[in-house]
Length: 333
Image 1: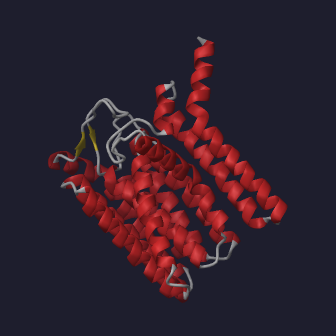
Image 2: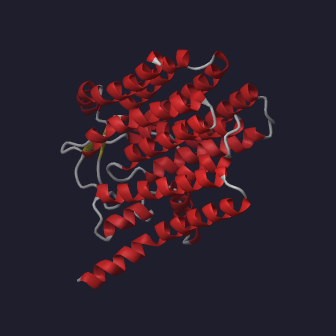
Image 3: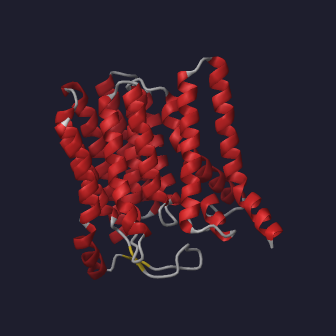
């Protein structure tokens, strides 16, 4: 219990306090976000503060090792390794820039290596390696694409971390319980910095960390026996927003990786939502689909179908929300 508390506390405190020292250094290094016409921000802002979240998260995971059974410790170590590799790649993108092809290759290598370790540790089929590779690489990109307004990534790490922790508690996977709490604590501590008056950004180091850590937790949890519905539910909104936006852009002949303002959460700010209101809306929908996933995992066929239908309804409402709220705003005027 002491090690578990220390792990969560360390993740929170390091993520909360280290930016005091890191922010001036990032300014000197010129790690700044300069807004353009497609940005959701209008002022030059320090980015790369995800380094502190990465430090807190990794310290928390390492401190959690004595709090789990010896046979579970390699899984926590694998989560830490994937999180660290994802953060390092994100930092290289923040500081020096990495070509799209090299970035995609390295993301796939991180996913393949992490999944291969999980397959070995859980003694499951090696056919899961390509699936896990795509899952990790894909979700790193999803969280990177979705990191465009204040609060959204911190709230996503907090909410999904807590939902994964709940899955660990329900299905008796203590390593998942603690890892989820550590992720939640680390990203919760970033929120005051991101939502404050002199706000800072995670940068790619933070968004890659978020995607890599959540994806490997999902892959490892599934291969350890946690039902897929309980793990996919919390990330459904991010996946739906990313997929719908990419398909729309590809269908229009646009470069899918180029900066844009076509995600649902961005379009919500265009119809009058503040950054925080849009981020809370995304998080609320994610919690709803997460709860639907839990219900589906715990229910028989009829209950499962009902829960999945409810989740689909939440996704449909989310994807249509800019048009719905835009019309309501026009009617009020």
